[in-house]
Image (cartoon, rainbow, N blue to C red; front, side, top):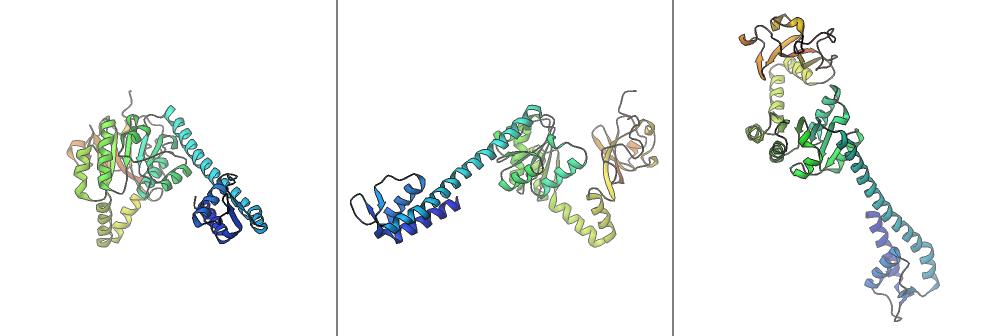
Length: 331
C-alpha cells in the first residue's frame, strides 16, 4: 500500500508540474485538485476523457511513464489483495484441519518468549505439534507460529469467540503467557467458564497478582519476576547453587526435573532406596516431600518427582526400565 501511494504521489507531481500541457473538457488548465483527480482516474481505470494531454511531450509522458505506473499500481493493489486473501485462506484451512480431529489438546495463549519456551518444552517431551494451538493477536507471532508448524488462532484471548475457535472447551491444558497480568486474569476467568475441567497454568509478572489468578481459576501460577529474583539471589549467595538451579531449568543438558509413574518393583520401598533421586511424591493429588512420614513407604498409584540425567525423557520411566510394569496398571 505504501508503494501504491508512492506511485500515486509521483504521478500527481508529474501531471501538476506539466499542468499547462493538459486540458479539461472546457479547455481550462489543470489545478492541483484536477491533477489529483486525473491521476487517480488514470491509474485505476483507462480514464473518462474529461481531462487529456494536449501536447506531444505530455502524450509521450503518458505513454512511457504514466502507463507503466498504472500497471505497477494495479499490480500492487491486486497482489496485496491476493496475498491477504491467500493468507486468510491458509489460516482458515489450517484451523479447519485441526478442528476436525482436535480434542484433548493444549492451548498456548501468547507466543512471546515464555510461550515459545513452553511450546519447546512440550515438544521436547513428546507432545505432537498437531496437539498444540497458539492464540495471539500479533502478526509477528502468527508468522513465527506458522513457521514452527503450529495451528494459530489470531485474536484477543479475552474474547470468548476467539477461545472457542481455539477449541478451549475440549482442551486438556491451557497455558496463558501474555505480558499483562490483567489480561492473564481475564483470560483465565474466561477459559475457566468455557472449560471447568481444563488444567490452567498462568504466568504472573508480579507475585501480588498470583492470588487473583488462582481465584480466577488457574490451577498453577508461575511468577516470572519472583522466580528470576530468587535465582539471582541464589547465584549471588552461592554461584555453585545458582549454576545447579540454572542447569535444572535448562532443557536437554545436565540434570532434569521429571515426573514419572511408580513401578511395580518399587512398591513398598522408601523414596531414598530408588535409583532416581526422588524429591517429592504425589499421592491422592497432594504433593509430599520425600522425607514426609506419610510417604515412608511407596504405594500403588503414587507418582514420583525426580532429578535425573537430562538425556532421558522426563515423562518416561527411569533409565533401563522403559518396559517394566507400572504400579498404576492392573495386575
